[in-house]
Image 1 (tube, one colour):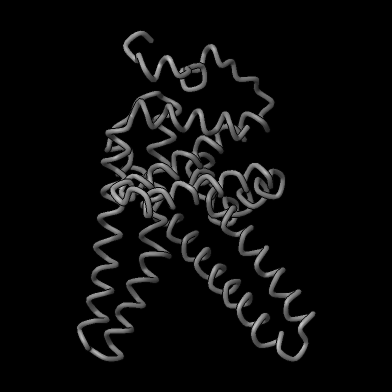
Image 2 (cartoon, rainbow, N blue to C red; image 1 turned 90 degrees about the horizontal axis):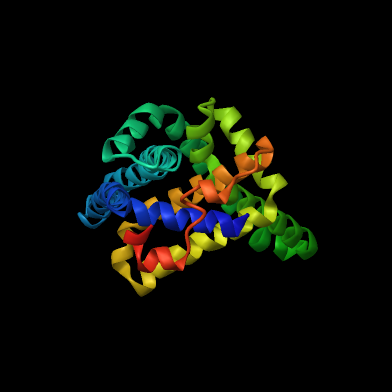
Length: 255
């Protein structure tokens, strides 16, 4: 299933690279602009107010702005998968349509991440000093929960866009999908992490494409999971995202 997801992701990106790059660049520029403002508030030597402003901007970005933009990218990717065509306006429409629920999911996500990350550190360093076995056991459990939360977060926006449910229903669906497909979701996380590493370390220019690449990957993964649970049998001969090979990459005009 992971191989089919990667294949679909590649051909969706190949066919609609311009739209995805444009939407992704808007996301990266928007988030980068807010982060620059946060950095400026810190280095401006405003003291405590500057730190408060910077922290507020960071929380706003991680808990609200980034999830809303991710929902727009997921909506664009869904349109490209379902209709084999789309436009930049689909990204904007997705942001406008889903931002309240996406922001709520993002805020909840951020809270869970902070609590779990703090637990990993606290129980290992504080409790571990007096009762090592207990401290490291709880810290390890919190770390596994943190990884589970990261995997759930990867499927949140595709689940929201596909099912159009409320916040708790979307969160429940994403968590159940991860619980029932742990190895598949682990593979998705590794692919997303590898793409991020390549974007930042090898070719920094690709950083601007990274948001759309991850959301396209997650959307195609949800598509494969939907096929699995709906009991459908996808005919690759009828799906142009799944029936192409290396020849079509070299000679696209012969398709």
